[in-house]
Image 1 (tube, rainbow, N blue to C red):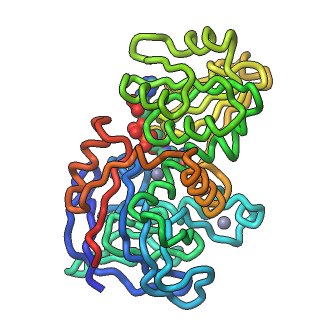
Image 2 (image 1 turned 60 degrees about the vertical axis):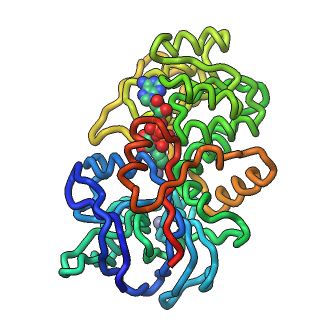
Amino acid sequence: MKITAAVVDERHGPFTVRDVLLDEPRRGEVLVRIVAAGICHTDSITRHGDLPFPLPGVLGHEGAGVVEALGPGVEGVREGDHVVLGWPWCGSCRNCLDGQPRYCLRLGDLLVGGGRSDGSTAMRDLDGTPLASHFFGQSSFATHAVVPYRGLVPVDPTLPLELLGPLACGLSTGAGAVLNVLRPHAGASLVVYGVGSVGLAAVMAARNSGATRIIAVDRHPSRLALAQRFGATDTVNALDTDPVSAVHEICDGPADFSLECTGNPSVCRQAADSVGMRGLCALIGGAPARAEVQLDHLSTLWGKRIVGILGGEGRSTTLIHTLLDLHRQGRFPFHELVTRFPFEHIADALAAAESGEVLKPVLTFAAG
Ligand SMILES: NC(=O)c1ccc[n+]([C@@H]2O[C@H](COP(=O)([O-])OP(=O)(O)OC[C@H]3O[C@@H](n4cnc5c(N)ncnc54)[C@H](O)[C@@H]3O)[C@@H](O)[C@H]2O)c1
Ligand SMILES: [Zn+2]
Ligand SMILES: [Zn+2]
């Protein structure tokens, strides 16, 4: 079928909105009409070649929409269902069987392989040139996507779909890191480096925990002010203050937990240095390709744990439904982070995110 998609033709190239062809859903796939798609920093780093997705291709991995058609062998969704397009997983590898689908052993191919696992792609230009598809199992910068059914998360049809896409990646990543991995204990101290949409989701989640010190570090005063509104007890501007010393001062020693949400390798070191003996430092930010991170060896030996986290860990369905419940109760006000842009204005949306003017741009698609 003919659809409209934002195609990236080459590394560093612009998003070109044009008509392309999309396959019908095959076995295990679902056709979704996209209602809205969030823009995540990971789309930018992929466009610039820091994630190895083949180009020309279609990015977008925070889609939400309505199920229009089912291929054979699909379970758990029906035509007309409202869905968030969560991360794909194979369902049969050791980690999927262990209940850890975020660490599916086939994840690399499923996220950035550029097509289905048999090597085929679902999208072509009108002249037949293949376009890489299935970015994070979706390629949702398009009016329609064919999606492996396992990643889909059906949601209550009375909820505003145009807000829900970012729950697929950025917001789940920050919140899930706190709720699924750090799990701060009563009286814990936690520092979040980088309060963009991922870091702010972490702050909001931490406010729902027993943590009594929630420190936000950033370089934009406006973001620090937002962090305070969403639950940070202390803020540090890294432009004029050494954040590691500031954290030690605020906590009267090292923090119990730190979360790195900037993707800057030198900030990874600051996050590791912010926790002490038996402290837990989680790395989330997406750094440039082949980036390396340094650690202080001796203090790391002291029972310190440094972990990387993908997508907030756990299952998309459980995490997204938890965040929707918290949102309904006024305890996870993520709608305040969202700014809507018509799909055709994708370049403006991206520029606004890159300049820091907008926290979470969401592209909206006219009903078709
Ligand atoms: N691990 C995962 O599964 C996963 C999922 C989604 C996003 N990500 C990554 O998470 C990161 C955050 O995403 P986002 O959408 O919130 O991005 P963002 O650009 O909106 O936020 C990053 C924030 O970090 C701040 N910052 C940058 N350098 C800093 C420094 N030296 N000190 C303090 N603050 C600094 C910026 O001012 C900004 O507010 C990105 O790198 C993204 O690629 C990872
Ligand atoms: Zn798997
Ligand atoms: Zn993302």
